[in-house]
Length: 168
Image (tube, rainbow, N blue to C red; front, side, top):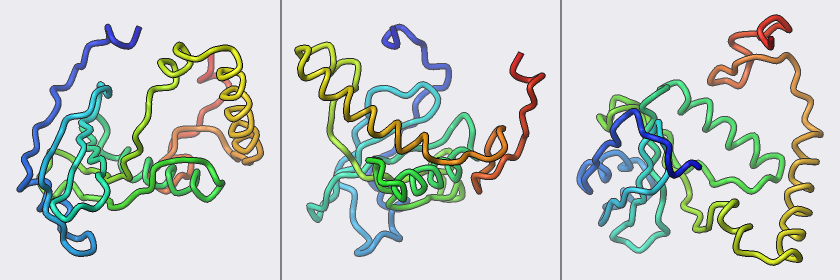
């Protein structure tokens, strides 16, 4: 179904020199050799960066719809990692002032297949094994005490509380 969804915001184009400038504060000030658009994402731009020095590729995620989401998502990634959940590492937070078209995160690139596509290609035993792994991850998440409910700010505190009336 998601293949039929329309992107409302045009994806941004970033050339290797602009990407190199954006990641200049990484150790070794790496040069970006190649920038490749990644599939998916309807609100932000996601690009794979390959580096001239041979270091592992990374994902540049530029926040177009909600610029405040960059800091919030970086904090969520770090929280999930602290709980032992498998999430890409945040390598760099990039402010909007760098000129990419919005704030951005540079994330560890993790090769893989979308879950729904992977499951459709598996037999029942493989799907059951994935289900057990997901159940374990959900159990870890369930152990987190969320506190007040609402929309989170960049510090992961509730910025806009939700009441029972809001849920209706």
